[in-house]
Amino acid sequence: MKPAARKSLRLRLVLGVCLTMCVLWSSVAAWMFTSMRQELHSMLDDRLIASTRMVAGVVQQLQPVAHAASAQAPAADILSVIARDGVACEVSLVRSEVDIRPIAQTANSPGFSTLDAAGFGRIHKGGKDWRTYVLEENGIRIATADRIDVREHLVQSFAYTLILPFLVALVGILL
Image (tube, rainbow, N blue to C red):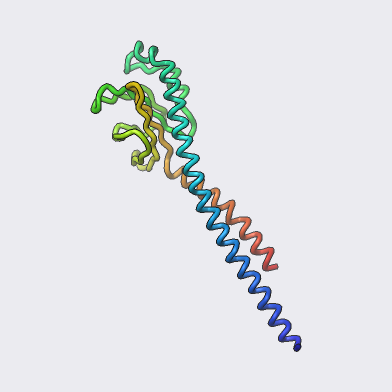
């Protein structure tokens, strides 16, 4: 066999292996990104539910204090518990379907007056989109929310952790 033919065969083999590795890594990275994105959104939704249930438990314990203090003066304990980083929250008294009065909210709360039903939803307030969760129990309505842009930034950060190893491995294979 001629040296030029051996070189050509070696070059084709290296290029074939590189192309195969790129296709395999790209497929695995796409699958991992899709799976990770779904898990991350599920985890963040679970955090909203957990935050809402935690606040509901605190409100149930402090309910006699809140009724005695009136709707205009919320208990300081409620405000300190729900002022969590990254999650906006609002506690309201539900007197009827149309009379919902907020008694406490975090400083970053978008205002949840437009939310209708319990469960998950989305609202657009203050130029931002929010993922919301509402729970109504015993005349108390608790609404929590995460900003969608913060969620997406977290997903993008994870995407970079998938892309960087791919690029390093690709450079290693080509070398």
